[in-house]
Amino acid sequence: MKHREYFLLMSLLLVAVTGCQQNNKSSGPIIVEDDYVPVYVLAGQSNMEGSTYFDNGQDWLRKAMNAMDLDPEPCFDGIPNVMTSHYGFYPYGGGDWETKIPYASNKTDPMAGEFLPTKVGMGADNKSMGPELGLAYTLQEYAEEDRPFFIIKCAFSGSGFNIPNPPSWRTASNQLYARLVQFTTNNLHLIEDMGYEPRIEAFVWHQGESDSNSSTYVADLEDLVGSFREDFQDYAEDGDGNEIAFIDALIYDGPNFSYGGVDNLNAQKIQFSEQSPNNFYVDSSFKTPNGLKLDIPGNRSGGNMDGGYGIYHYTTKDCYRLGQAYANIIIDNDLI
Image (tube, rainbow, N blue to C red; front, top):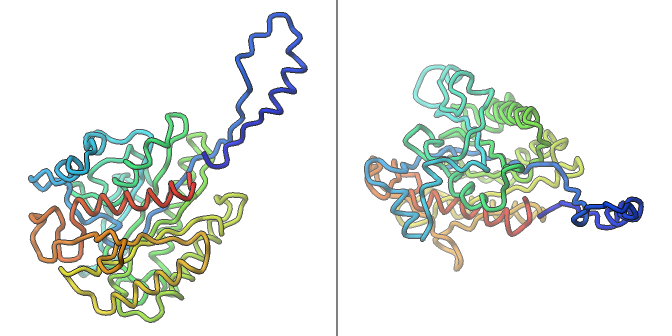
């Protein structure tokens, strides 16, 4: 496992010093391990916040996971060794967006955060799920009781870089980004209060539908990711913010709905991934040879078509698969 250090030489030296004692009961080399725990920060808009039903009276998640030959019960009982703290809301709909009530794991003080075993109902409301579920389920075999993994999710439906209302990720006041920073900081302190040393291994992103006609998306990502890496360098490996991986996902480009400029925006996502060996993306495309073809219902089905509701949001199966794909990048690149 990444960065765990096994000091066999130290053990042998200790044995040399103490091993002559007649009643030495040493059972083998002393294992010295780094004491950090991995943290994954999730951000973006509605498909990250989680606008997909896990049930809606139709048992969508159990059906999907059974079809993938996976046991769905941990997703309902809670995955104990992968903990999630989440905060999100929809900043449209009239009124002062600052006063809108978020849906969060901490019901009394949402911005303070609260870690709970990852389970269904951590999406936009208690009926919904986001990619944290597939992420946690896939990573759980790498976590341990005394070394849990932590997910911090702060996402805002309908948000973008270049839209004035609600405030964008990239305005001068940068209110959405400021909330992400504050929520992430609060939750890192919660992890420290548990007695762990948190290390941010990856900043995981899903956003772009609101910016599908943007010609400046690469610059927007440079601003966002650069700021995040700088702001959280103290929680990165060796204090180097550039060691925080950035994992993006292509936005929907399939037949059920067409965003203007989607191909151009996805090309910019790929272009940004090529700027650093620590930048990655999930190929969720319908148009590439190895794309995952993550799908949406494509109509306002009210969640009665494979669990996706609205015309922009993943089906239950593919919301889960998105999280699974993020996890596979984390595993393949030893970000654990």
